[in-house]
Length: 473
Length: 91
Image 1 (cartoon, rainbow over the protein chains, first blue to last red):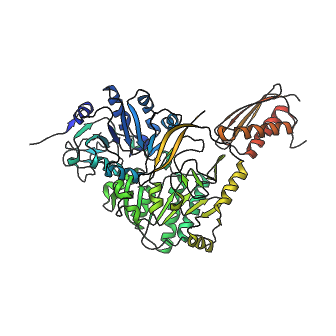
Image 2 (cartoon, rainbow over the protein chains, first blue to last red):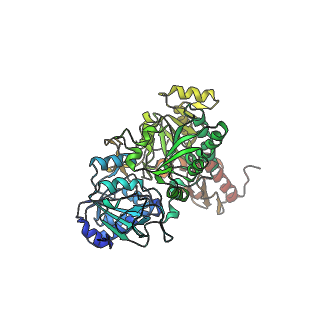
């Protein structure tokens, strides 16, 4: 007998058995264009729910309406990879009684799989879905409105949550295959006007930079890679967010063509640059946990060698089979790096949360070569400091720091320093970079932190790594 | 020294906009994106620059977007030259 799971959002919530105090989850594949979190939480508020734990794969500027839902007691706990904008500012100033729990993408996947982060009801936006719940981030009809490509961060939720609701703005005929989320994992399907604005995926941290300093840093990072000893036939690579790390790919491409070197795979957030290299035959496979732009989302829809992976398959520390373990080179950005090579990508130098952990600690720890690209200063804010404001990625996983004032190599990797020096690159002591920054900006006054813990940073193995305190104006 | 209203600088990131107006003593009203860590230093640079130019009476409104000290000195000096009509680079 033909069945349908299509119901209204309110019916789906009632059917899920959601109760006050339970955990709800969301993915962030639409990044700054997400419409699902605000829509669902507004409905939950209207239905009178209180005391919910919101466990999102990440949150951004667009989620400012959560501030009111927190004030009204609808949401009393948050777990996420990051926070930005007004919500982040309010939380940094002590909005919530309970601290926000921050995890990396791999850490979140592991925590969901192990049951440490138990999800009662997952609300997962999808670009297409059939009436039984086979869902995808790819377009499957001419009515497709919101396309996000990979649904990698939603897959652990779909697999492990007690109850799964898929929201879609394009209900298509059964069977919606190839699928990312299986109908067998889905209890309800809700049709909404829009799950997200695809044009805002490639915004914020993943915009393409025209800043000349970013381009200089990107060129330096490319030289580091080419001379690192890891740039050889069959290597693998990932680029994190940030203008310089994304742009570095362009310069590596030139050298790959010149030397006839091919990459076996590119991992992570996949961008148009990576798709281009793949289509040119320079990168064999694209392993995509998150499509960072329209080109990547279109590529995963049509190219069998461009494969979606879940957050667990991508970066879990618990599985030796997760892709980060096979990763040779990763280029990452940073808000701050300290003289022990520790990195902060979450809390601004003003003490306010303004970023996301993402896959930073996952890829840094498990890759063979991790390269941090950051300017020495952003305005008057130093990026190379004596001690990071908040510890996100421990220095033992960080190998090279590229700045416009020179390249610092972790003393634990002397062989890399030797190779870079032999190639004529300016290798400097990281203490000299921190001192150089201080000589330009002076000695900053201490940040006005209060006594309240507003955030807990978990490492990717499930242990507390650091805590974030409130800022007092 | 007679002071007229004058302004120098922009609100671009890494710059500072300095407005000078007549006042009693040196009063610096600073808004800065890096106030918590650098407000004290920025005010000191503004005051020292003005005093060095012989200006002891003025109201200064500064809107800072993370400018370095060299930029702050240049913008304050330019605003002071416009406010006093005294070209410190030429004279």
